[in-house]
Image 1 (cartoon, rainbow, N blue to C red):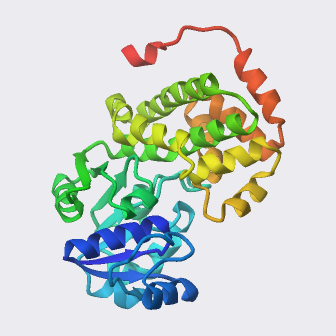
Image 2: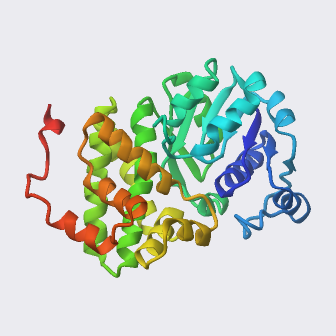
Length: 333
Protein backbone atom coordinates (compact mmCIF):
# COMPACT_ATOMS: atom_id res chain seq x y z
CA UNK A 1 0.00 0.00 0.00
CA UNK A 2 0.91 3.66 -0.31
CA UNK A 3 0.78 4.97 3.25
CA UNK A 4 1.45 8.45 4.57
CA UNK A 5 2.78 8.80 8.12
CA UNK A 6 2.35 12.33 9.49
CA UNK A 7 4.61 13.17 12.43
CA UNK A 8 8.26 12.47 13.17
CA UNK A 9 8.12 11.84 16.91
CA UNK A 10 9.06 8.52 18.47
CA UNK A 11 5.81 6.70 17.74
CA UNK A 12 5.45 8.04 14.21
CA UNK A 13 9.05 7.06 13.48
CA UNK A 14 8.64 3.54 14.87
CA UNK A 15 5.45 2.96 12.85
CA UNK A 16 6.94 4.45 9.67
CA UNK A 17 9.90 2.10 10.08
CA UNK A 18 7.63 -0.90 10.65
CA UNK A 19 5.52 -0.16 7.57
CA UNK A 20 8.58 0.56 5.42
CA UNK A 21 10.27 -2.66 6.48
CA UNK A 22 7.10 -4.60 5.69
CA UNK A 23 7.30 -3.39 2.10
CA UNK A 24 4.73 -0.60 1.95
CA UNK A 25 5.49 2.64 0.12
CA UNK A 26 5.78 5.08 3.02
CA UNK A 27 5.52 8.86 2.61
CA UNK A 28 6.95 10.03 5.94
CA UNK A 29 6.23 13.69 6.72
CA UNK A 30 8.55 15.20 9.33
CA UNK A 31 8.03 18.90 10.07
CA UNK A 32 11.36 19.66 11.76
CA UNK A 33 14.29 20.12 9.36
CA UNK A 34 16.96 18.89 11.77
CA UNK A 35 14.97 15.71 12.38
CA UNK A 36 14.52 15.21 8.62
CA UNK A 37 18.23 15.67 8.01
CA UNK A 38 19.13 13.16 10.71
CA UNK A 39 16.75 10.60 9.22
CA UNK A 40 17.82 11.17 5.62
CA UNK A 41 21.58 11.52 6.08
CA UNK A 42 22.34 9.58 9.25
CA UNK A 43 19.60 6.95 9.09
CA UNK A 44 18.39 7.66 12.64
CA UNK A 45 15.95 9.95 14.41
CA UNK A 46 18.51 11.29 16.85
CA UNK A 47 16.06 13.26 18.98
CA UNK A 48 13.47 10.52 19.54
CA UNK A 49 14.81 7.07 18.61
CA UNK A 50 18.55 7.48 18.41
CA UNK A 51 19.37 3.77 18.80
CA UNK A 52 17.07 2.57 15.99
CA UNK A 53 18.35 2.04 12.43
CA UNK A 54 15.71 3.43 10.06
CA UNK A 55 16.58 1.03 7.24
CA UNK A 56 16.55 3.43 4.30
CA UNK A 57 13.38 5.24 5.36
CA UNK A 58 13.27 8.78 3.98
CA UNK A 59 11.61 11.82 5.56
CA UNK A 60 9.79 14.41 3.45
CA UNK A 61 8.97 18.09 3.94
CA UNK A 62 5.76 18.53 1.88
CA UNK A 63 2.70 17.26 3.71
CA UNK A 64 0.49 17.78 0.66
CA UNK A 65 2.63 15.56 -1.55
CA UNK A 66 2.84 12.96 1.19
CA UNK A 67 -0.93 12.74 1.51
CA UNK A 68 -2.03 13.26 -2.07
CA UNK A 69 -0.89 9.94 -3.52
CA UNK A 70 -1.53 7.68 -0.53
CA UNK A 71 -4.35 5.25 0.33
CA UNK A 72 -4.01 5.44 4.10
CA UNK A 73 -3.01 8.32 6.40
CA UNK A 74 -1.37 7.52 9.74
CA UNK A 75 -1.70 10.50 12.08
CA UNK A 76 1.16 10.49 14.59
CA UNK A 77 0.58 13.96 16.01
CA UNK A 78 -0.41 15.01 19.56
CA UNK A 79 -4.15 15.05 20.26
CA UNK A 80 -4.23 18.83 20.65
CA UNK A 81 -2.65 19.22 17.17
CA UNK A 82 -4.85 16.69 15.37
CA UNK A 83 -7.56 19.15 14.33
CA UNK A 84 -5.12 21.70 12.91
CA UNK A 85 -3.21 19.09 10.91
CA UNK A 86 -6.41 17.46 9.64
CA UNK A 87 -7.78 20.82 8.54
CA UNK A 88 -4.55 21.58 6.66
CA UNK A 89 -4.97 18.48 4.47
CA UNK A 90 -8.75 18.03 4.42
CA UNK A 91 -9.17 18.84 0.72
CA UNK A 92 -6.93 15.93 -0.30
CA UNK A 93 -7.38 13.66 2.73
CA UNK A 94 -11.16 13.47 3.14
CA UNK A 95 -12.34 10.03 2.05
CA UNK A 96 -9.04 8.28 2.77
CA UNK A 97 -8.59 5.85 5.64
CA UNK A 98 -7.38 7.65 8.79
CA UNK A 99 -5.31 5.74 11.38
CA UNK A 100 -4.70 7.60 14.63
CA UNK A 101 -1.80 6.92 17.02
CA UNK A 102 -2.36 9.60 19.68
CA UNK A 103 -4.21 9.05 22.96
CA UNK A 104 -6.06 11.97 24.48
CA UNK A 105 -9.13 14.20 24.63
CA UNK A 106 -9.34 17.60 22.96
CA UNK A 107 -9.47 20.60 25.27
CA UNK A 108 -12.65 22.70 25.21
CA UNK A 109 -14.67 20.38 22.94
CA UNK A 110 -13.80 17.31 25.10
CA UNK A 111 -13.86 15.30 21.87
CA UNK A 112 -12.20 11.97 21.36
CA UNK A 113 -9.90 12.00 18.31
CA UNK A 114 -12.42 10.03 16.24
CA UNK A 115 -14.97 12.78 16.88
CA UNK A 116 -12.52 15.44 15.69
CA UNK A 117 -11.80 13.37 12.60
CA UNK A 118 -15.50 12.93 11.86
CA UNK A 119 -16.02 16.67 12.06
CA UNK A 120 -13.07 17.65 9.87
CA UNK A 121 -12.91 14.60 7.55
CA UNK A 122 -16.53 13.40 7.44
CA UNK A 123 -16.05 11.02 4.52
CA UNK A 124 -13.08 9.16 6.01
CA UNK A 125 -13.26 5.93 7.97
CA UNK A 126 -11.28 6.10 11.20
CA UNK A 127 -9.20 3.53 13.03
CA UNK A 128 -7.54 3.99 16.42
CA UNK A 129 -4.38 2.01 17.18
CA UNK A 130 -4.01 1.61 20.93
CA UNK A 131 -2.48 -0.67 23.51
CA UNK A 132 0.76 -1.29 25.43
CA UNK A 133 3.27 -0.19 22.82
CA UNK A 134 6.31 1.89 23.66
CA UNK A 135 7.87 3.20 20.47
CA UNK A 136 11.35 2.36 21.75
CA UNK A 137 10.42 -1.33 21.92
CA UNK A 138 8.43 -1.46 18.68
CA UNK A 139 11.42 0.10 16.93
CA UNK A 140 13.61 -2.70 18.33
CA UNK A 141 11.05 -5.28 17.15
CA UNK A 142 10.25 -6.52 20.64
CA UNK A 143 7.01 -8.59 20.53
CA UNK A 144 4.03 -6.28 21.01
CA UNK A 145 0.26 -6.70 20.82
CA UNK A 146 -2.21 -3.84 20.30
CA UNK A 147 -5.77 -3.14 19.13
CA UNK A 148 -7.16 -1.63 15.91
CA UNK A 149 -10.54 -0.15 16.83
CA UNK A 150 -13.12 1.22 14.42
CA UNK A 151 -16.84 1.57 13.88
CA UNK A 152 -16.17 0.09 10.45
CA UNK A 153 -15.04 -3.53 10.67
CA UNK A 154 -13.57 -3.61 7.16
CA UNK A 155 -11.31 -0.65 7.99
CA UNK A 156 -9.99 -2.29 11.13
CA UNK A 157 -9.25 -5.44 9.11
CA UNK A 158 -7.35 -3.43 6.50
CA UNK A 159 -5.20 -1.90 9.26
CA UNK A 160 -4.72 -5.26 10.95
CA UNK A 161 -3.38 -6.81 7.77
CA UNK A 162 -1.30 -3.76 6.77
CA UNK A 163 0.48 -3.39 10.11
CA UNK A 164 0.82 -6.93 11.45
CA UNK A 165 4.27 -8.55 11.53
CA UNK A 166 5.83 -11.47 13.36
CA UNK A 167 6.63 -9.09 16.26
CA UNK A 168 3.63 -6.75 16.04
CA UNK A 169 0.32 -8.50 16.63
CA UNK A 170 -2.97 -6.62 16.12
CA UNK A 171 -6.44 -7.49 17.34
CA UNK A 172 -9.59 -5.80 16.00
CA UNK A 173 -12.17 -4.22 18.29
CA UNK A 174 -15.48 -2.55 17.38
CA UNK A 175 -15.70 -0.59 20.66
CA UNK A 176 -14.09 2.62 19.44
CA UNK A 177 -15.37 4.64 22.41
CA UNK A 178 -13.90 2.22 24.96
CA UNK A 179 -10.55 1.95 23.21
CA UNK A 180 -10.16 5.73 22.90
CA UNK A 181 -11.24 6.42 26.48
CA UNK A 182 -8.88 3.74 27.80
CA UNK A 183 -5.96 5.11 25.80
CA UNK A 184 -6.60 8.68 26.92
CA UNK A 185 -7.31 8.10 30.61
CA UNK A 186 -4.46 5.67 31.27
CA UNK A 187 -2.13 8.64 30.77
CA UNK A 188 -3.76 10.36 33.73
CA UNK A 189 -3.27 7.34 35.97
CA UNK A 190 0.35 7.02 34.79
CA UNK A 191 0.93 10.62 35.85
CA UNK A 192 -0.50 9.79 39.27
CA UNK A 193 1.61 6.63 39.54
CA UNK A 194 4.72 8.58 38.64
CA UNK A 195 3.83 11.25 41.17
CA UNK A 196 3.52 8.52 43.80
CA UNK A 197 7.04 7.35 42.95
CA UNK A 198 8.32 10.92 43.08
CA UNK A 199 6.85 11.28 46.56
CA UNK A 200 8.73 8.17 47.67
CA UNK A 201 5.71 5.89 48.03
CA UNK A 202 5.88 2.19 47.21
CA UNK A 203 4.41 -0.67 45.22
CA UNK A 204 1.26 -0.80 47.34
CA UNK A 205 0.40 2.76 46.33
CA UNK A 206 1.06 2.15 42.65
CA UNK A 207 -1.07 -0.99 42.68
CA UNK A 208 -3.92 0.88 44.35
CA UNK A 209 -3.72 3.74 41.84
CA UNK A 210 -3.66 1.39 38.85
CA UNK A 211 -6.54 -0.74 40.12
CA UNK A 212 -8.77 2.16 41.08
CA UNK A 213 -7.63 3.92 37.91
CA UNK A 214 -8.97 1.19 35.65
CA UNK A 215 -12.19 1.46 37.63
CA UNK A 216 -12.42 5.21 36.93
CA UNK A 217 -11.71 4.63 33.24
CA UNK A 218 -14.46 2.02 33.08
CA UNK A 219 -17.03 4.24 34.80
CA UNK A 220 -16.55 7.16 32.43
CA UNK A 221 -16.33 4.86 29.41
CA UNK A 222 -19.58 3.11 30.29
CA UNK A 223 -21.31 6.47 30.73
CA UNK A 224 -20.26 7.28 27.15
CA UNK A 225 -21.50 3.92 25.83
CA UNK A 226 -18.35 1.79 25.96
CA UNK A 227 -18.30 -1.95 26.57
CA UNK A 228 -16.88 -2.46 30.09
CA UNK A 229 -14.99 -5.56 28.91
CA UNK A 230 -12.83 -3.36 26.68
CA UNK A 231 -11.12 -1.96 29.78
CA UNK A 232 -9.99 -5.47 30.71
CA UNK A 233 -8.15 -5.73 27.39
CA UNK A 234 -5.00 -4.42 25.75
CA UNK A 235 -6.19 -0.83 25.34
CA UNK A 236 -7.34 -0.70 28.97
CA UNK A 237 -5.52 -2.61 31.66
CA UNK A 238 -2.74 -3.66 29.25
CA UNK A 239 -1.81 -0.10 28.35
CA UNK A 240 -2.29 1.00 31.95
CA UNK A 241 0.18 -1.57 33.28
CA UNK A 242 2.95 -0.63 30.87
CA UNK A 243 2.42 3.12 31.24
CA UNK A 244 2.36 3.06 35.04
CA UNK A 245 5.47 0.91 35.42
CA UNK A 246 7.90 1.77 32.62
CA UNK A 247 10.44 4.58 32.40
CA UNK A 248 9.73 4.67 28.67
CA UNK A 249 6.43 6.32 29.67
CA UNK A 250 6.74 10.08 29.38
CA UNK A 251 3.60 10.46 31.53
CA UNK A 252 5.12 8.43 34.37
CA UNK A 253 8.42 10.33 34.07
CA UNK A 254 6.58 13.66 34.21
CA UNK A 255 4.61 12.46 37.23
CA UNK A 256 7.83 11.56 39.06
CA UNK A 257 9.15 15.07 38.47
CA UNK A 258 5.91 16.67 39.68
CA UNK A 259 6.05 14.50 42.80
CA UNK A 260 9.59 15.75 43.37
CA UNK A 261 8.37 19.34 43.34
CA UNK A 262 8.50 20.52 39.71
CA UNK A 263 5.52 22.23 38.08
CA UNK A 264 3.77 20.47 35.20
CA UNK A 265 5.38 22.93 32.76
CA UNK A 266 8.86 22.27 34.17
CA UNK A 267 8.25 18.52 34.10
CA UNK A 268 7.15 18.61 30.46
CA UNK A 269 10.22 20.61 29.49
CA UNK A 270 12.51 18.17 31.25
CA UNK A 271 10.84 15.14 29.62
CA UNK A 272 11.37 16.84 26.26
CA UNK A 273 8.29 15.41 24.56
CA UNK A 274 4.54 16.02 24.64
CA UNK A 275 3.06 14.67 27.88
CA UNK A 276 -0.51 13.92 26.77
CA UNK A 277 -1.76 13.19 30.26
CA UNK A 278 -1.33 16.77 31.50
CA UNK A 279 -3.90 18.28 29.16
CA UNK A 280 -6.01 15.12 29.16
CA UNK A 281 -6.36 15.51 32.94
CA UNK A 282 -8.24 18.77 32.37
CA UNK A 283 -10.36 17.35 29.54
CA UNK A 284 -11.24 14.24 31.56
CA UNK A 285 -12.03 16.31 34.64
CA UNK A 286 -14.40 18.48 32.58
CA UNK A 287 -15.93 15.43 30.88
CA UNK A 288 -16.54 13.70 34.22
CA UNK A 289 -18.16 16.87 35.56
CA UNK A 290 -20.35 17.14 32.47
CA UNK A 291 -21.67 13.59 32.87
CA UNK A 292 -21.71 13.45 36.66
CA UNK A 293 -19.12 10.68 36.99
CA UNK A 294 -17.16 10.50 40.24
CA UNK A 295 -13.45 10.16 39.40
CA UNK A 296 -11.46 10.98 42.57
CA UNK A 297 -7.97 10.22 41.23
CA UNK A 298 -8.56 12.41 38.19
CA UNK A 299 -10.05 15.13 40.40
CA UNK A 300 -7.07 15.21 42.77
CA UNK A 301 -4.55 15.14 39.93
CA UNK A 302 -6.40 18.05 38.33
CA UNK A 303 -6.12 19.98 41.59
CA UNK A 304 -2.38 19.28 41.81
CA UNK A 305 -1.67 20.31 38.21
CA UNK A 306 -4.11 23.19 37.76
CA UNK A 307 -4.79 24.45 41.30
CA UNK A 308 -1.30 23.93 42.82
CA UNK A 309 -2.52 21.51 45.48
CA UNK A 310 0.29 19.84 47.40
CA UNK A 311 0.61 16.24 46.10
CA UNK A 312 0.93 14.77 49.61
CA UNK A 313 -2.22 16.58 50.66
CA UNK A 314 -4.00 15.15 47.61
CA UNK A 315 -2.98 11.62 48.62
CA UNK A 316 -4.24 12.13 52.18
CA UNK A 317 -7.58 13.34 50.82
CA UNK A 318 -7.86 10.28 48.57
CA UNK A 319 -7.09 7.95 51.45
CA UNK A 320 -9.54 9.56 53.89
CA UNK A 321 -12.58 9.93 51.66
CA UNK A 322 -15.87 8.47 52.85
CA UNK A 323 -15.83 4.67 53.07
CA UNK A 324 -17.68 2.72 50.39
CA UNK A 325 -18.07 -0.65 48.70
CA UNK A 326 -15.43 -1.56 46.13
CA UNK A 327 -17.76 -2.33 43.21
CA UNK A 328 -20.53 0.15 42.46
CA UNK A 329 -23.97 -0.81 41.20
CA UNK A 330 -23.31 0.70 37.76
CA UNK A 331 -21.32 -2.42 36.88
CA UNK A 332 -24.30 -4.69 37.54
CA UNK A 333 -26.99 -2.65 35.82
